[in-house]
Length: 305
Image 1 (tube, rainbow, N blue to C red):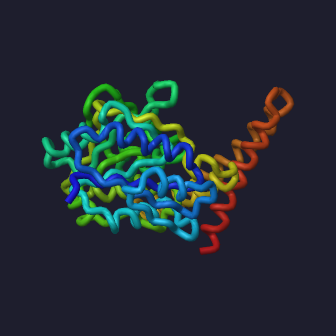
Image 2 (cartoon, helix red, strand yellow; image 1 turned 135 degrees about the horizontal axis):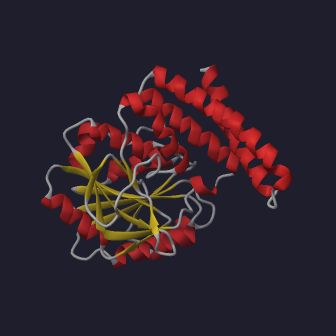
Image 3 (cartoon, rainbow, N blue to C red; image 1 turned 90 degrees about the horizontal axis):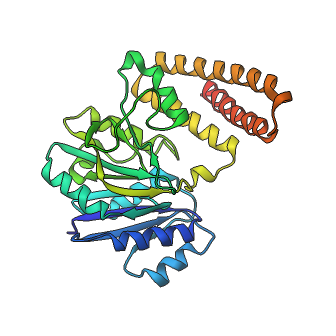
């Protein structure tokens, strides 16, 4: 049994995937690891690249884009490692990050999930963890969903180890026994919110989630989700947020979130419409318009259920 199973989901990002895998192999110091790539029906010869350049990698080829959660679960089903690492294909590993994460889990038996420091391409800190509010403060999570982990007033010092509620899905390591206890990714989350859901399910058990700063990963934010058209991205993001609220906070908070989202759309539309005559970048208004349309689509589809 390998010590570590590394699962990478890919969709039409051949060159970035190649760079990611090269960095993984370069930073596996002292680790017995297997790499599993799940390809979501790429059309850019990603599969051919893996087969020719990395024949030792376990490759799963989907005939359609199964989404992030389902594809990761496919990889998990074939993984045999003591620890499971979910890694985005738009990352580059630095500083033997994985061995440091494994070492932390070995020394801290209460730790179920561990995330590491994420960096932007210019090596500045990229927010990668957050705490969830209690249920009566649940509406504050809106900022985290709309702006990303680390928002909603949740500030961290990224130079020290800290217990957190959720770490970024771009790179996080989980004990196999944790997944056996709480289950894998919820496949109802297609592209957004799946790691937040998993981390919150873990929070409700005796396991702890930690951020450790000793290993660094560059995250380019070129994943499938970030390359979607603005309207589609917004709709998926809002639907994921609705599902998260319904699952973990109940119907009352889902309704509050829906009302808040609708008010956000109205007020945002009024603001950007008023600002339009004074804007130099007219394309920004068009982008905002597409973003709000995606949110509205998600609301209308929620009402039809």
